[in-house]
Length: 209
Length: 209
DNA sequence: GTCTATAGAAGGATAGAC
DNA sequence: GTCTATCCTTCTATAGAC
Image (tube, rainbow over all chains, first blue to last red; front, side, top):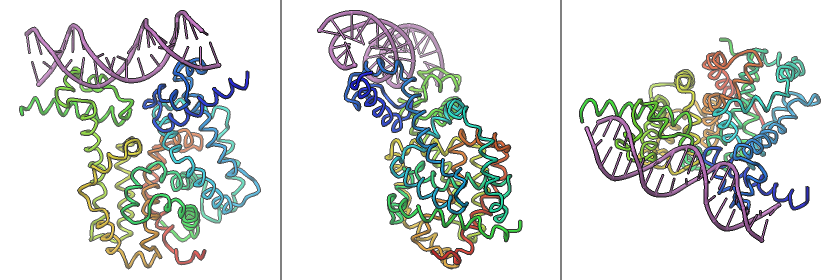
């Protein structure tokens, strides 16, 4: 593979990523990708054969990029609270640079659930899950979080950081009217989210119900 | 307009809603809508002229249906805590029956931000916003929630109930592995969400930071 | 490896019969 | 009002020259 090859393939890949993430599989046009890459439409087929191939390559890479961001969650040397603060700060900063990723990935998986199965076939989620639980068993007990309620908590964490980006279009209008603006809202969210969520799990012992 | 007219138009509208919500504007095919409605493709054009017209009709109605669910938030006779519990119970139950609505609406607005402007041109958000704040001024002060931090709180509330549906495809796989299953997760979320969020804003006075 | 030209299929829209 | 037949555009994909 020559330097030029790599360059062209990469140019195509980056252009495709941009267009697919922006328009989704159904809305994206090969023509748009070609223009964005500054090359001819048929070159796309030369390098990736079909639109489907190209999309799959882009989708897989994009998911890996996002998944990599979750590695610190499994770091044994961090306390639960450290992880929470780290998670929100890093995660929101990443999404700030890639605001369309959440909607893109959630959508394409909703439309075609098989996609996710290919992605995680090499990951033993159950094992990772148990590891994580054992790692913080003591802290979780302190917070009255059981193995049964942990999914509720974790998904709430994800929701707090991901939702604003998935709903960006709506929130921009809403935040405009309440005087904040989307960018400032996100900037403030980095610390708000952690404080808010730590507060939610703290004193959990009090809530009799 | 005869009975038959109304019936056909309604059949088309319902079929279109189903297909559009499922596949999105770009992914939906007029042919699919016709089949779903049990009629011919050209009838769609007879009643709605173009795909765009049909989509707009469906989108507008769908948004109104969702917006209507937020009315109790502005009810003067409910306390803040009552509203929170009511909101989560009603809202999640509604989404349980319409799981694809959030992703549909958020997406179509992200792809075409103008859509939302048409929808809310008759609503004075700023006014409603101030009304809401004044209504609960005392309670919000107790919780140390200012006019500046209120958007963070409200958007967090929305996130907690909406996100699981928007990310359904991913969560189904995840919840499978952790032993819960999506439906049970949602059922449990109706009460978890309220408890969790009330906990998050309670004792907010303690968090020095 | 990159381009032009074009095939081939699909989808939205319309004409016209009933 | 509903259908069949068909037009026209758009889009993916391929053939073939350079």
